[in-house]
Length: 241
Length: 197
Image (tube, rainbow over all chains, first blue to last red; front, side, top):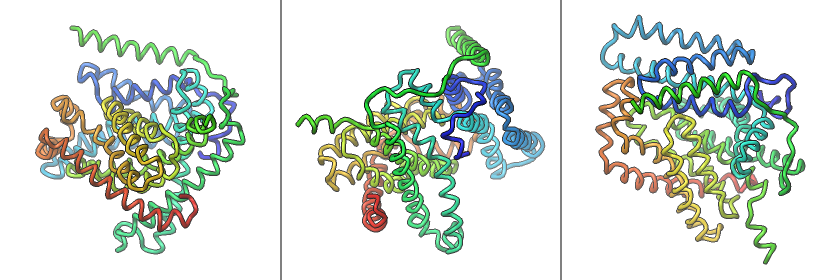
């Protein structure tokens, strides 16, 4: 995942990066924050299913299947086990079910968007939206660094396991110093190298930078816009009524 | 003098530094937020972010030499909170706290250690913005969370009367100062030796 972040790929993804931003926005407002209440329930279901379809178009079959399995087992739990559970078990189950129901679609959207958008495409989209560099460059760097941080963190965890520094290893108190600090050090070092490489490519210049990525709207984007517009209109009608 | 002025404008390197440290900060904040599923930890969340987040933030402050960087970092945290489903309220709130933190560090000329620790105390206040819907739109907030179970809601309700928000602000500030001092100690012990501070 981390290798292909910088190389512009030939096969374009179905959606335009700007549409993906809108997709994230809608998922955050509609599915995560559950704006609109019960009236928008049908639309919420549509937007919860959407990420699975998008993952299929991006040929991420594994992620899609795992997601469906998790969702399926959650519904299985909800309908078979939950009616018989009571007390603490019931509330724990309920929390797990709720969290997964709400967060899984948004999480999969995140996987889809991060997996199919290159940093260049993201920057091109933000430039077209006239976002200032002050916001876009830090965000580009962040998206570039998240996979790196995960990798470094896994290596550090493995190294520290040998020394018994882990949860339940008797030295959990040292975790802060020997897990968090190395993670910060590694990331800062990698970031400095990244900074040097970006500056040699002319990031420090105040001139307007060009971008190799051509982005534009296709039929899928317009279909998505229609869907969002329908949701918004339906919601406004509901508020007015 | 003109060179001094142009030196006050943020350059590409500064933007990249903001990105690096915001990424670290965000990962730590998210790891801590996972504990927020247990009711009592939801309330303590802003404080724990203050303490643990103080470490990368103090390191970030060693890179801050120009006005605006802390504000941008704060704003990005607010936007990310919006994206992760905390409603729009964290965004204006994070801008406000970002400006205050910026002013605190600016008053120390961007190098005084004392104002750095103070800024580390002010900065994590952005995370209190996540609680704003809990206090301002109480019914709506819990309507969205009925499915968490009545026990969870009762537990959260019990710990959050309205004055609690100000108590949270103060607690976060104090914890942020602790985090800043911790970060300062670790700066000396680890980061300077590693050559990145």
